[in-house]
Amino acid sequence: MGNRKSQLEYDAPWRKTTWGTKKKDDLINDIKGIEPTTGDLKCLRVLLVGPCGSGKSSFINSVNNALKGRITSGALCDRATGGSFTVEYKPIKIESGHSSLSVVFNDIMGMEPGCKQGCPVEDIIKAIHGHVRNGHVFNPEKPLSPEDEDYVKDPTLSDQAFCVVYVLAADRIQLTDPSVLEKIKDIRMQVRALALPQVMVLTNVDQACPLVNANLQRIYYSKKIKEKMEWCSNRLGVPMCHAFPVKNYHEEIETNNDMDILILQALHQIIHVANDNSQARSSNNY
Image (spheres, rainbow, N blue to C red):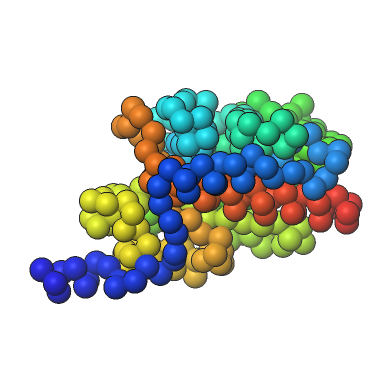
């Protein structure tokens, strides 16, 4: 039994955190208290990118669940389709409760293996720069062009994304097609000039490790979860301090403090780095 335990977990956590209602309340209060650093910014836009079925839409709903204390369904998601369920560029407001800092998550069509499959990388880059109109339906075979009606020729600062969040499923990340990982690395290379913060969220942690499945609070003791995060960090170039393991809401009908704390820790980092980037890009007139 002892040897089995040593194979699954470390003696001490590799990332320290605290649990309980107070921790959750502190995170929510801190998130609500974040002030916008750019005065003329109408919303702080965050773009979610990832393979089909990685849990992008579920993560958006899980964030709102954690903040509202109840199960929500602002972003439609589906576990039955083989391809991407999200095809439309739709903004979803994160209800942080702070009217002066409006946070918007934009979910996009999932990435798929091969050429002309899933969301075109060109369209993801255009979305980051604010050139994609809300409601645009992505077409894998025809990326958005400046001549299209849905192309925003003169985007405002609020149209742009200030953080890209890569959402990956921890239970099958090492089975991800290499071409999808190459597309993600391509995005990273193309946005270097913006100094765009990039955060990695690993979903399905309970399905990736039996230790975590039994007790979510053991997540930062788990060798398997750390190995998967390091694997992603090494291949995508996102530092471990910007990588967050979470369990999305799926079958639950009530919120859970442990799930919420992991989700809110990721949201806390996303908002802070996006807010910082909005100020830098405003100052440098990107």
